Length: 214
Image (tube, rainbow, N blue to C red; front, top):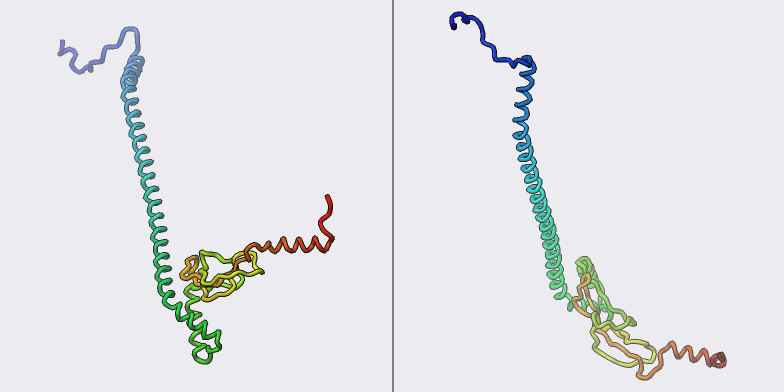
């Protein structure tokens, strides 16, 4: 039997009711059905990995933003501290020069600031002004206890509020920092005196014959 079939290639059995093409198509469909579940599982795994990567990226982005905000706050604190230290050091230096400036002011008031002495004084005043030193305090301005120090006190009929009537020593500041208040003499309104506005109103009424009848 095997000798007689030698040289002939065996062919697979073909169903009696189908052609070889139909059989091959059926086998391919069966293989595709068997492979479909494996493909779905792979897609689910890939989606899970993608979600994990997105979550990790969001967390790392949040960490980076927090670090950046902390760094910016640190830089602002360092800059603010640097400015504060500089202002304190400048204020301490200029505070030591205030008695010299007072002497120069008295010499100027007495007409003694002349010649080379005057040039030196003006140079010193220019230097301290460049360093931010500002003089304040003027006669006639309202008394402010935050920037004025009252050394003398009196009453005056021509003031309506506590007023600086004399500047005994000028005040000095650097920016918003007061390094010495202005030392002043103040005057208050006379006790029991009517405000100036009411006096003028009363005088006007008398000149017009009194207030109009209602």
